[in-house]
Amino acid sequence: LRAGWLLVLSMLHRAAARPALLPLLPLGARSVEVIGSHLLPSMPPMCLLAYIEVAAAYATQLEHLNVSLSAVGLQWIVCDHLVGHAGVGMHGDGAAFPSPPGALVERETHARRPSQLGGEDAAAPGTPGKPAVARAAEEEGADEEGAGGSSLASAPLYACVAPAEEVHSYSLWCAVFRELRRLCADSRPEVRTCALHTLASIVSSHGPRLAPATWDFVVWRVLVPMMGEVEGETNAAST
Image 1 (cartoon, helix red, strand yellow):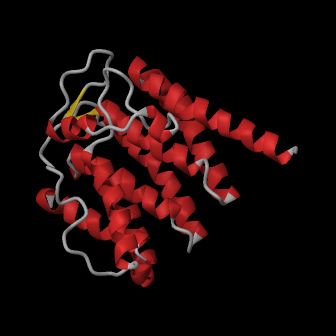
Image 2: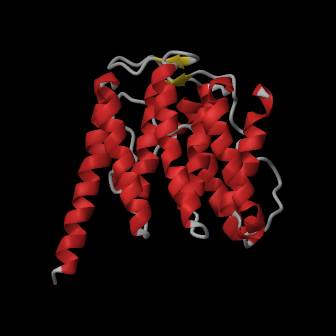
Image 3: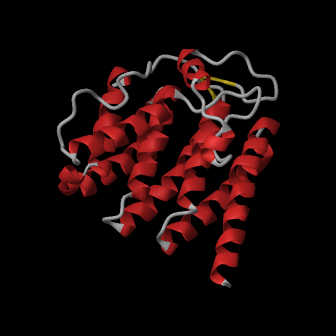
């Protein structure tokens, strides 16, 4: 299954993102939960990046609230896996980074500036940017709009990702925190609350194991922007 993970994850992502595949959403959600509960140790780290995005896709879909809440909890399961399998197929996430592998280099070269992202997802100096799987998900969204949500697809979503490449554990942690950061701004209060509790639990439980560079991402790319949004919403509500 090692070589087929990306195809499986591509199909699961489409089941959550494409309106034409809405009847498959509950089945896809159960499949994603089974993978998170039992199969993460058999998944290559590069595929784990894709899994984090797939789980987030089920959390952001608007059709089934319970599916969204369960999918938020999958980010916690991923973090437990990272702690229990630190260093397996991954580079360390210490302050001194080796050069990122191919897919990360490609993504870092095309990284957007903080002014384009509102400062949220920009790569910090000296650290790898979002990997190729993030760009693949963005392109999937564009393809979906152009196809009107059709169930047809010309190629698997993650076809451009090389599953055998090594991944910085920093990138995996940041992918989880990035998705939780987005979910904390979800339009549904139940999802926002669940994401915030999950984020707080991860930080309190695994914070001592995070490297300084990962903490830098958490503070400046997750917590500070979130506090700014809360302050802005509060000021808007009071006027």
